[in-house]
Image (cartoon, rainbow over all chains, first blue to last red; front, side, top):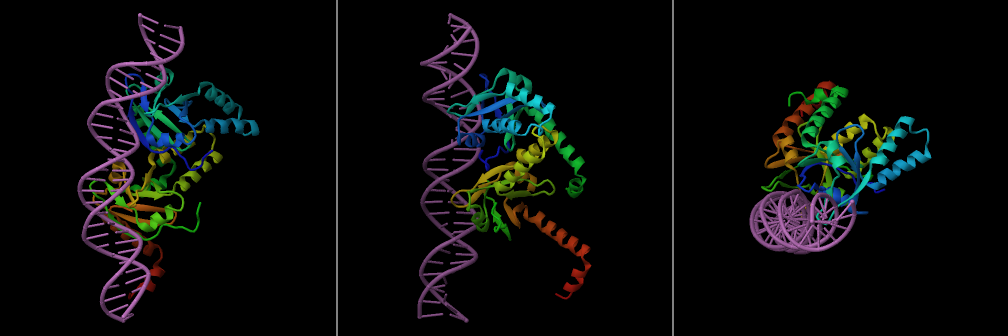
Length: 155
Length: 155
DNA sequence: TTGATTCCCATAAAATCCCATGTTATACCA
DNA sequence: TGGTATAACATGGGATTTTATGGGAATCAA
């Protein structure tokens, strides 16, 4: 798997009447190294879509094979859910993918979508939901790292 | 990751009407070893922009993969925070990058920017803010090490 | 046929490239 | 050592390309 290619940044794109969304060009550039499609599935923990290169799921499958006790039964079940739900989404010459109703419904996405980089993965959110989620994460992180909070006082 | 290259020195450059800034040539020389882009993100602790090579974040991504579970909440939060905010900034043949509005706003940068070396990373500040920050850092250091202060008296 | 998906083209905005210029730093020579 | 030629750099502006997005025609499936 390529190492120096990470999904980054947060970009908002429109979902048109046909259900098409432009994949951010940075994301496309990563994918194009190997193919012209990404893999998406419903997040198990959040109301959002997750996406990645097929490579990543392949790595996950290998990890499961090679270290049986590395994953708990619970996580074993979770991976089953992921593989059962995942699907390839090719993008056309203009860089758009067409997300399924199942995914859009799960994320509550209608007319616009936010792409959030996560390194080897990325997520697609309903803009309002992402706004709330981002606020939650920031407060969560500050809670766990009070030293950070202190440094910011006075800004 | 290359070890013998560090971001150093403090240089001030103009930000033009299009939002372009010249990356200090010393910094470019470091990056050019491998690519022609840097990664920038909002500092978590200060009103400034932080920059580094993508290698550094890639290492972080790998560390997270190996130390945390694939599906853990903690990994989700951290990756969202870090990679959701970071972005690649390629520089053109004249060595300029175009910083996003989000970054410029966070650092309060309008028409000029100060690059401050920090070893593996560097920071970009609004000149006035950096002046204050540098003064704060110096007084902080003197407070904690009175012996230094005594030695320097008379200079 | 009907509904949906894919392909292709058009357009406006934004990002990028390229050339020109003044300035600073470096190299060279007397 | 001083002074000049040369190269490297920062910066401005215009031209070109990329990107996101809309809409229509062609293709496919039920």
